Image 1 (spheres, each protein chain N blue to C red):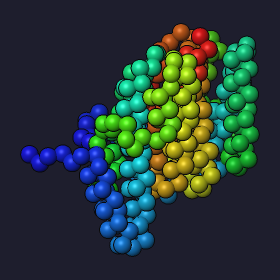
Image 2: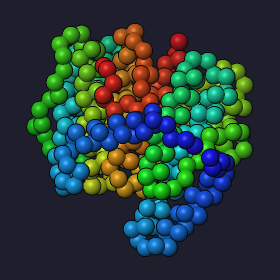
Image 3: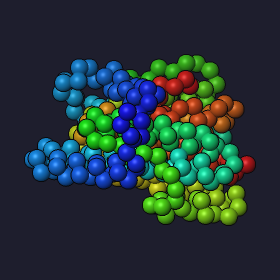
Image 4: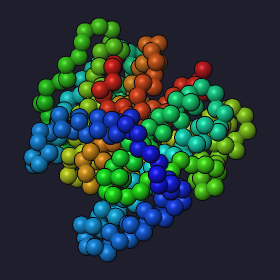
Length: 156
Length: 163
């Protein structure tokens, strides 16, 4: 199979995010508890945002995010990381921006965590955040499948 | 210009290369595991692109096929970085996994969509199961985002079903 420029860019783009998230490639990554902390902060903020949104979708996704937070605490994620920045606006718009932040946190962590269980956890949370962005985009009447590599960097 | 190897030749050459790597010591054996895993993942994405091209599924099938082709190309860059050949595009139904064949053989739009959902679940599981064999952070991230993309395909099919 010929590897195209587009394919290289896609693989490189994910690599670029990695470099942006962890400093020089040879740096020793922080402990798993630190790497998971931004994911926990995002899940907590998302649970609040979806509770605010309410309705069937808001309630469903708030429950999912509380479950994410529970799993991250079980994995000993450090509490107290700052909540990701989100623009003001309608609750689902805010939630979409927070989902993007959650994806970035989980992509960064999944490449660096030491434990296999934490690698699986962050990959599953990334996949769930990607699912939620489709559900929320559909709710907002937006195009849903905007990228082949949902990593939180496509436009919210 | 050298001819491109067929998909079967690329797989055979890849496996031979992996065998040589495995004989070269523990670090090389880990590389062989990663190479084998990446080869399987590229093949799975090429299969998915073929299935959605051929399935005649209403809705997002064209987008799925295009995105699966992008996945295959991105994962292939990691395989090439290991110095291993990449499998070519899937040309026919031979060697497709049962979940993929089920999409092609389903009768009626609803049944085909249900089969596609099961197929997407199998692709997600395939990525998740293989994460542990990957060594490099960027490779792990690429496969994790491919898995996330399949989660998006799955929920898109669920949303179409509810309409």
